[in-house]
Length: 436
Image: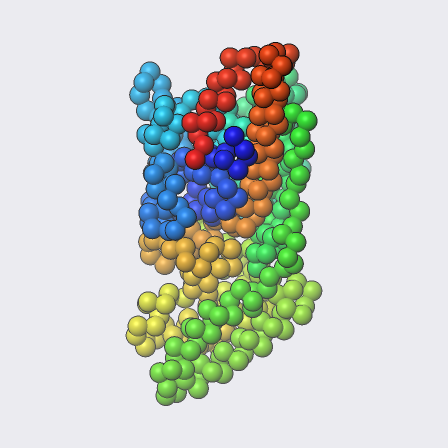
């Protein structure tokens, strides 16, 4: 079996509206499960998986699970539970060690600079649940995304504990601060670094802390190469939104009358400001989109400092505009607020999604505020793709290496001294059943 025949499987928790799922999919992973608690985000996942070209595999084998990840149990116990569609793919229930990648963007509020940074004491901290799933599933690789705040000095002990749980070492238990040695779960933490979305072609800053761990028996003599950038340079907000802004203004220009003249002038003003920003130090890249929460108001583009940065790009950050359907089917007062106001156009949800790096045709469900929160809280797909591609490279290299060893062992009639023949056979059979 060649590496190209290997189907890389993944499970993602806290999947949101699919930002990370899109990136993993683009990198070659195929999802066995997407787990999300927000009902609108679940509907977004269901609608896109159901209708998008290229996602036929997921339509057949992916369980989209609406619920709390604390209740998610992917491996059946006593013949009950588990992932129904995964069992169809493998020809048997999913078992420990079958999965290639467990990924998740665990909630950021416990570590966000915008919050109280309660860390492990925040009930929304899902690192413990992620570690439980790593223990249960024993995937070949793990990928965890969070805000850069988790890299702050105040969380050093907690980071050390998470690393020790994965790869072994001394650390303080979060619950009582007592230091002890942890055996680990057999992983090597290959990176836990902050990546800037702007370095991967996303037209906003959005720094994110990414942890990647690979099972030691999989990594072996291979090297995980940390992604550094997309190699294509930065993308400005002007480049990302040029076509969609023109489309929005053109609607009112085509209607004629006083709105047409105003729309032309507002469009010229936006182009001037956005192009001017391209030549500034920031290169016309937006500040981090702020998704907000159900507890705090409606949708806008963040605190005063963020709004000022958006203003430099010719965009009003005071709210989110109505979409194409709401804003263009009728000429109502919202046009003066959303597009033709003195402070510049507001972003639509569709435009915010472009700034986040979503594909143009990725659809979001729910009301405007619910849709914007899905976008604003997402992991930019291009960053997820870059990290997942680095993981996929290691997994494919490991598969090729192990296949060569197996064939060499079979030719010589001897088992490799460090390998258990039955385990090697079981692993090879599993991979054959998982190939498409």
